[in-house]
Amino acid sequence: MTDLVIRPYRADDIAAVTRIYGHYVRDTVITFETEEPDEAEMASRFATIASKGHPLLIGEMDGSVIGYAYASTYRAREAYRFTCEDSIYLAPTAVGHGIGGRLLGRLIEDSSKAGLRQMLAVITAERENSIRLHAKHGFRMIGRYEALGYKFDRWLDVVHMQRAL
Image (cartoon, rainbow, N blue to C red; front, side):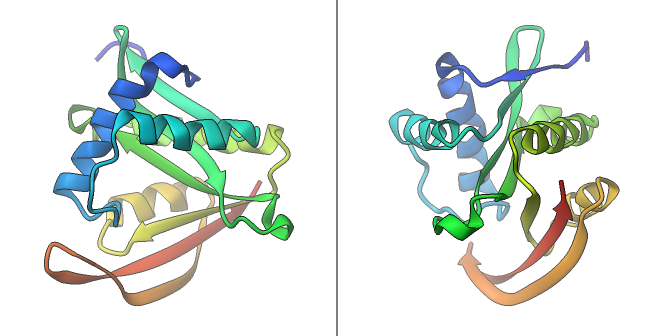
């Protein structure tokens, strides 16, 4: 793999972003979403995140989008305006090459610069690699919800991790 470029999201990234996310909806328990959103829906979601001044990052190699990360509003109520939730999604071929860690590191940095003060990670409990990644970046375990989501005919636990920015 050649050098990773991490840059801000652009509207013309939406097809690649939608394709990457679709894999996670269809084939994994990383997201509890069960219906793949189309490009219009993903563009709307990203526009909402951008309108709040939260970071939206694209990981690119050789001119192709191979992953993305963003900090979304944790909850809509005004008192939560300084708290965000991170999300990182990689193309399947990009997993296991340290790209997620680089995207998370940059996301933490950019979120702090944007004035956010706390970052939460909401992770399907069986995703030990994601838990380890977040721990490496200073997140600590703050809770576990049992049987919170149901996907692929099974109940799934969720963990919350948190770090100050």
